[in-house]
Amino acid sequence: MHKGTLFIISAASGTGKSTLIQQMLKKNILDNITISISYTTRLRRKGERNGKDYYFISKNKFKNMIKKGFFLEHAKIFNNYYGTSKLMIEKFLLLGVDIFLIINWEGAQNIRSKITNSKSIFLLPPSKQELYRRLQNRGQDSDFIIQKRMKTAVSEISHYHEYDYVIVNNKLKTALFDLTNIIFANRLRLSYQKRKNFDLIKKLLKY
Ligand code: 5GP
Image (cartoon, rainbow, N blue to C red):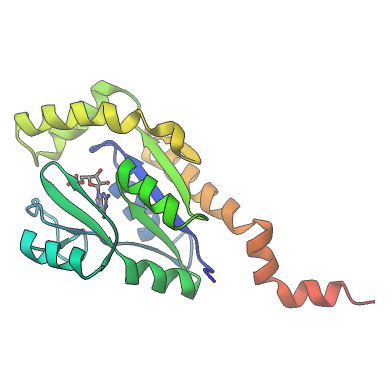
């Protein structure tokens, strides 16, 4: 039985989902929490590290891994493959670690059907102008790619209502507060507390 919770987080490219999750992990606000590192065939961007941001692999290797059933889910986005390791997710959930998965709406739909007790969070940018500005400021993509990402952003955002929670990422500090509240509340659920405080409840119920 899974003791941890799988949190899916989606947002249009440039909304700041990776920064938000990295900040949450860096600040050590919560214990027993980690992030799933996806496999991708896209080129590494400036500052990205293999094994930290993604596992960067070739298309041939990726296709072989699909055949071997390595992925819990995978998708083709912007002409590149992205996929989540089945083993990594299972390992952490069994250990009681909450795991964050940053994936697009398609991947989220896929995961929800496989891990039915997962929780999903959609992150919205405060405005279209701000999203455009953030994409430009990253300095990672050409104008052509940024225009493409802005179009994809609208289609990604149109799926926001499929999620359990919605956070507007205007100020990082506020978004971080919202995110940690979701995790804390999830850990106070009856099913979680029943398991965590099994001995206490047993003693309290004795006459
Ligand atoms: P980027 O290339 O900007 O890092 O990511 C492009 C898109 O791929 C984002 O929407 C991101 O959430 C999504 N993505 C990253 N990893 C995975 C994955 O393992 N599976 C799926 N389905 N989408 C992913």
